[in-house]
Image (cartoon, rainbow over all chains, first blue to last red; front, side, top):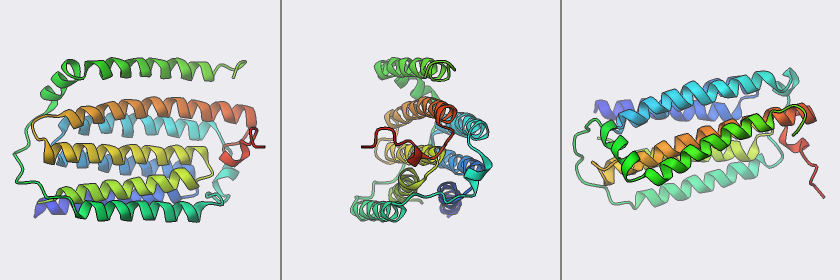
Length: 163
Length: 102
């Protein structure tokens, strides 16, 4: 009962700020609403018994990516970008496409067999760390390469005289 | 007891919202916000399937860790490109970047 209530609160906390984040005119407010939505996703990870992902979501998304986004919002654009129309000419088609996609997925989910009773949640960080450096070690190293490439790319694109 | 379908529906709705944002926003940063929302929808699905169908083996959560890392890399490069575009074209609207349009 209390779990269902928490789930409902988290669902509202994810979806309503997400709608605001894609529809408000002021992109700064959009980024701030994105923080709320991503924190709600972190809470949903905690409900699903994933303690490590809960912390990683708060640290990386709510703490890192959105702060980066806010910096870029402040460094680029002008205040007149915040009062013009924010959607392009194909917004109605996008809305229809997204609606069709979500309703298709919803009909699909209704036919899923409901899994049996759940086991108790246990702390998962140790098992996750073992799986990351033992069974998934190749993707782990690949991701470290990608992060290095992103770092180099960010420096390269921001050099003033090239680009 | 919350069912698996509930989590999947929240994930699908979040994906739909992100899809709309990525397709319809004029502002490049708005497009990036939509893409972040879609990443998070995929993460919810991964973790929910992991919890309900394969408890005890956190493979899905490991995948979600990789998605978070790749989303961080994508955000860094994307936002740097936004800054470079703004410096060269003095615009943050995607429809003004039409150099390759025939």
